[in-house]
Length: 214
Image (cartoon, rainbow, N blue to C red; front, side, top):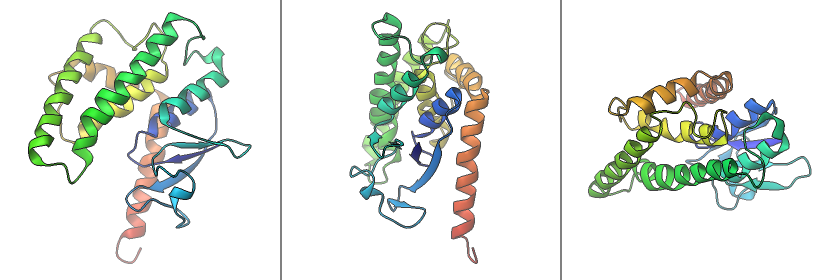
């Protein structure tokens, strides 16, 4: 399977999940600024929305939206327990967290900060909105090492990926000690370290290619 991936994008969560499951994905890196693939072709021909991630299946079908892709991958190996069984309350709890992270942290909180055309006054509103939700998340993590039950799930891969964007926006997590602990713990997992290393190396290669004489 092929994952259309971005160096600093939410698609990192999908790569983490795949590595947890022992699924070897072919990573196809997307330059989201130009919407171009490594061969120069238009990414819109792969995903007309122009968003990552996209997962290409062996039969050529493609799935977009990270939350859906992660569910699909987890259900391929239910014995790994990255997503609880259908019909269980724990599965609903995982999906509840996926919705919170996608809507309140990703879209509602961080995305306005990433957009260059966000007005300064709204940028401040977004930071306050994000701060309230990170405070709530910190409270939920007071007596947890993972978001649901005892097992690392797709919700943890998703939450880690998005919450780590605090570093990209110079937002210290010192005010949220439980979140700080959680991010350090999740970040120590081999799957996370390997996925982040792959993204870092691709980022360095991209910088080298665009440097004078590169």
